[in-house]
Amino acid sequence: MKITGKQIIGYSNADGATDNFKSSIAMKDNSGQYMFSEATAANIDEAAKKADAAFRTYKLLPVADRVNFLEAIAAEINNIRETLVPVAMQETHLPQPRLNGEIDRTIGQINLFANLLKEGSWVNAIIDKAMPERQPLPKPQICQMQRPLGPVAVFGASNFPFAFSVAGGDTISALAAGCPVVYKAHFGHPVTSELVGNCIIEAAKKTGMPDGVFSLIQGKTIESGQALVKHPLIKALGFTGSLRGGRALFDLAAQRPEPIPVYAEMGSVNPVFLLPGKLNEDPESLAKSLVASNTLGVGQFCTNPGIILMVKSESADKFLTQYAESLSGANGGLMLTDAIYGAYCKSITELESFPSLKLLGKGIADANQATPQAFTVSGTDFLKDQSLFEEHFGPMALLVIADNVLQLLTIAGNIPGQLTTSVWANANDVSAHKELFDILEEKVGRVMINNVPTGVEVTHAMQHGGPYPATTDSRTTSVGSQAIYRFVRPVSYQNFPQELLPPELQNGNPLNIWRKVDGQLTKEVLA
Image 1 (tube, rainbow, N blue to C red):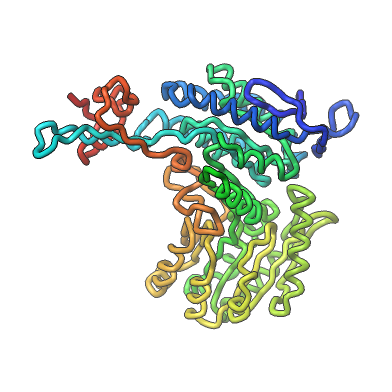
Image 2 (image 1 turned 60 degrees about the horizontal axis):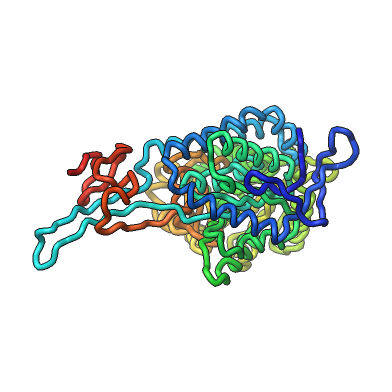
């Protein structure tokens, strides 16, 4: 395992600033921890310029070349899996089965985008044929399709060192769209990041991609990230992280002379609603499922159920009793970084100071590990303090006991934008509480019935996004094939000769894709 600690700028490595930061991994010769240099403004300028130059070539490559590139990335990552997993275990404290599964997911989503490109209809090719005989004026032929935006900056997540990281969904969807990527590695796993970054570079070389199609910069300070966002050659930004970080980048991008779109996923409390009929059927089993969901992975999922709501009843009392009992046997663990653990401890201390909150129970944890905890609060007190709607990253849940269904609906109406919501309901609940579903549809990107929110399927129909503050743009997703639309824009071609049109719009339909011709979907060859 050769780790340079340098910036990966296209096909070259570059030294950064003299200010360095350490990884959590010691070198094999035990001479100390791996050291990484902070990216300088010059490093970022070189990466952006290389990406812009690469874009001129990359966007024009045949689709098959992009497919080969993506598939080669997946193969390179799989080839060094036995190196990647132990390294990521040390840097993130995540267990081996979880990380192996995450590599599988990463490879799976790369292949999803490769297959999307092969099928081809994602470009939304539209052809309105010419009508030269039309009176009083002839109608020209007008075509439209999605085209790539340009170089994209991607900021990786702390909690998914593979699936939301260097070769994660943001990077791969941008590359699939035809956009080079300048990736800002998360300082929590810099060794893992360099290893995966080298996989992408190796794949690019093997498949003949232009120098600069991918770069990776390292840095622990905010200056390198800010310089990347402000660079005039960057045309879009993908981010996964905190509300504070995402909003800062969003504001910075909006202040540029040329503002750019920012697709930031910034967390969520993922409220869970337990309706009376379902809660009455088996409150104990439901409590066990939600404790397991909340504490999974030390609560470090963006879809962690942080708020659980119910109406006061005997069934609710049974649920709370079982929740406390199950939580008492739940194990905590080491969090991703010391900073994240410190923030979790601080948030617990703050919650303990609320007079309206009562501690329901705690789990088990050793020193320096996050302890699972749960608090209860009345619906009335919950509505009085908007800060109780905020996310506390880690294995913590707030259980809200409403006075009645009407108050439950009021709370639903006051919840800020979320990634997900889950409703536990039987058939009678569904019929009796349709208004709740109408409210929740306006609040979240994904509504579930009788499912825990933890876990996101990488599919064509997945929506991983939601109204602000969950994300900066609720019309997009960061998971699934629809993520590609963040990094493209529609372009119309009017009265173009065939040789100047992209293959997707040519009359002969050489790629044999579905197109909308005069309003009708077809694969027909046009005269």
